[in-house]
Image (tube, one colour):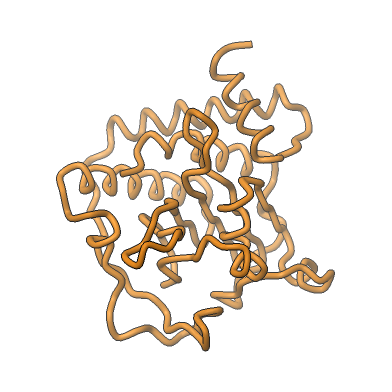
Length: 232
């Protein structure tokens, strides 16, 4: 087993992802990793969103009010400790990874979140790069919020959550944080550093059911194995 195969196998074990034909899956992940690395080496610098629009939050901040945007955009400057050259480069690379994912997945929404303490000192997942509709900037990383949020659940547990049919998931009693009611499928996967610590998550969503095929999951795993090295 090569080092790359080992890292893929280790990620699947840590994230609790069971796949059919593990050797075939690992080979697909590796191809995606190589394609992504080549893309990052060749792509021109992309624009960085230090500020982005966010929805108004409902009572208690438990759910977003869909279609109603807050007057003030969210600004990453404070939580990242300033607009340094290092942070600028990190956000450019993460934005490039999001662009790569958009090009090859065709999905409607994707976000990269890092586990950090916010300006109030509270542990959160903060959205560093994304594409798609406006969405929440920070997800609290605590057990109470995890009861209604897959993002927070995965950010705490490190276990991936793939939902190919949101309506069926809700019908079976699953808890779900609804930001966009058009979303019919969601995959939320953890990010780990080299020591296996959870350092963030990715969240991918689509307006169609059953989009997270084996190949789609392999692309997501490749992205998850790539991102941690570029986090600010």
